[in-house]
Image 1 (cartoon, rainbow, N blue to C red):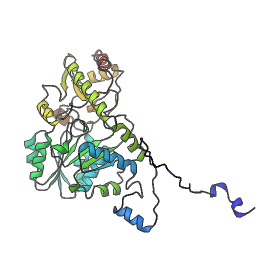
Image 2 (cartoon, rainbow, N blue to C red; image 1 turned 90 degrees about the vertical axis):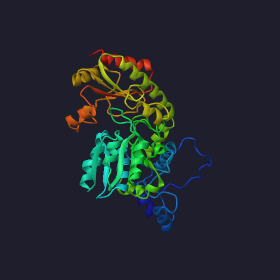
Image 3 (spheres, rainbow, N blue to C red; image 1 turned 135 degrees about the vertical axis):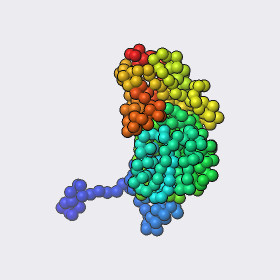
Image 4 (tube, one colour; image 1 turned 180 degrees about the vertical axis):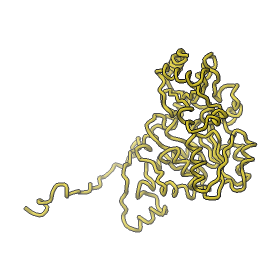
Length: 395
């Protein structure tokens, strides 16, 4: 028996030989799960890692599925650059880590998602960055909050959960007058409803987990923006480990293919849901930018290109007890603290997204025990109204 025959099977790990791949391009993009790529020699490795030659070495630095998804998002937002991150929070982190340093000042909307607000206040405070929280729907108050050290202003196109609409163009004018940058979280709108860069924003982020993917099966975010502010963004994503997985990127690329259809249908349903809820005596208030009496309706009409989004927030008479009764009775509407799925879901801001916010601040924001945030899906409007009526019947 020779040496090769004596070797245990697990000692032999032959590399697969390259095969001839047909020149035709597959209609569906393939998944590239590889963590690492082979280099021809040291010179090629240096060129790839330096970015002077296109290609891949290590997936934390970039991979084909991430690049394909980033390019789709870049086109959707009309941006010069885009990078996909492991979550919406990671996209915000990439912007902050790339653009802000100790001694700088950040202005943050008081209506941001709770974790975003925590990042921009307490977490940045630990790193020597000052922050001011202000109602960015009040343009005058926002302008007054900007000082000579302000580097970044962060607001939402449509706020969570009361669905106030920020005047992106006005905020951009005030930011640029003081050499600050404007970052808009566009998650509640999506690029089919609003493209903030067209209104003057320097950067825009999306939680791709939500309506852009639309199937509640990925955790991803994207940051888009101008090349002028992009020098350190890719470095921040790679160095801080904010990179996404290839499989999630592949799923989101597939989801974005139906974004326009899903967003249009969900937005039409949301408009009808809001009009239905207004007629119900169990409901104290309905918040939806598509309603004529919404405080920001005219601004939304000017700023939005198609529809008013797929989220409707309403407050029930009877407070937390009413909300609990409604959630128990609305058996066809899952209680899921997210949004943008194919089906209608609900969440309760007081106990989820804003649970760490003090009761006094929540009251000031208009978030009460009876407040329900509804993410409207693409089912028939009849089915959605029936599900809501089932929940309301318990009150």
